[in-house]
Image (cartoon, rainbow, N blue to C red; front, side, top):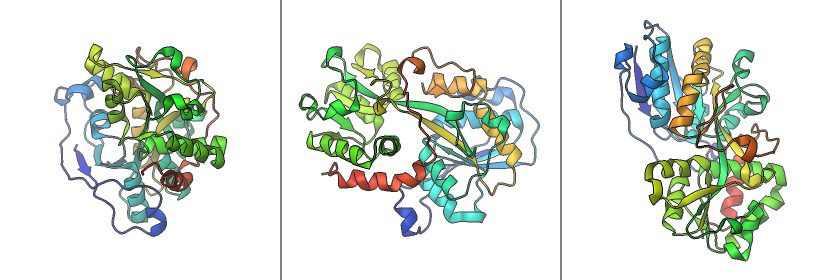
Length: 370
């Protein structure tokens, strides 16, 4: 059985309507890799996920379009290939690029499973009719609020939005309860926003849905007027806060936990959760769906079930420090319980794909990239 890793290049010429959906990432190179055929051949994290004997190879081959990084999901796919005997070919890339490529390919797409670091891309594919309903057994592996209303995708892990702050420069007494407080004078020039990052854009799309366009656009305009700092992505934001370059940053929770684990006492940053009923505490899911064109729906479902298994979910939460969404799996000990610090919002992510284009337009019009 073979597990090959390919890196997608930018899809061919796209229509103007599709191109406007998101900011496209740069193209990547390509590489191949051969999967293990015995338990002893599995390396590192893959061996931790699956400890049984590898199954005999079967004829089925699955093609995965993965918007999740190879470093994180590669070991899970290795373990799945070993345990099932099913060959896996994976195209890694920006989730928006991959979704656009899949739509451009249409009925010719080789993709069987789509993995995304956010629900925006799967929402887009759902709206375009490129995802098929999942079985009730598969949907039952997560809570109802971590799956599409029409059952076409399912959440794999959760990432909470938080405010990371420099613990040497900021007192706990000065931390805000709401995202709306960050427009105050005391936060002028001290809050970083990774405005081009997909997780921020997904969050802002839900913000618009919850509070209305006028409120969301005004908040962003007020942040710009308050000299908010634009950063490239979550990790550089966390690093800069830890160095004291600025006091605060809006990020996903796990980046700071990862840096604290790597740097120990040398990292001077902590996560702050806004109030549970504040949009700043939103939990955004990573997601998986099966394409409507697949000729191997049963095997594709088997892969997603494997990603929601206890072993794979435990790997995700201990390796990346994300929240596991598979039923019955507890988060890593370092993570605060979502029951205590999570969002109370009744959020549906189904409309994220259709709302992303307008979100990007509002962000660009805000003047944040001045």
